[in-house]
Length: 154
Length: 75
Image (cartoon, rainbow over all chains, first blue to last red; front, top):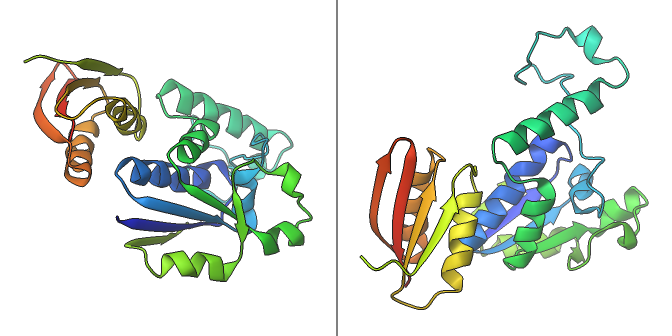
């Protein structure tokens, strides 16, 4: 059986998609998949994903309906607005929500591993995170990644 | 061709057509035929890759008016 190991290290809406899309698809293709969530990526294992947002700030490649100078992007509420607009667009285009993709990963037997060090660093409680995941560290990841056909850092 | 099951994946974007196809196939028995209709223009290449990786045979595929039709034979 082919194996894929992913490190998910980012916690913004745009960077949350690639690990879940690749993990769920690889599982559908018959891969044994493990995803290790570390640093800001740990946000993606929280029960409530409403904190996962996108910011136009410092992201000049983000397509905008109207050009928006950086000085405007710093205004309060801009991040929430950009997030609402992006989620709306994702839905309209038939892209699955993060929650859906994460559920499909779990359903397909993808192993989601939370970085224990990050949990301690940010004072997260295991109770904040979804059920059905594992906890571990760098060695846990490498134990699996060393035998993987595909290994990605996202 | 005797289709055993149909899946409407129209309006869905990557990777949902693949994930739904996999799910439906897993409830079918070996040799049965599944017809999938999708509108994702990435689907032709992805469905072929899905067949390559899983061993389910892509029996036919076609396109009419932006709709892609695939027939899989379960491994």
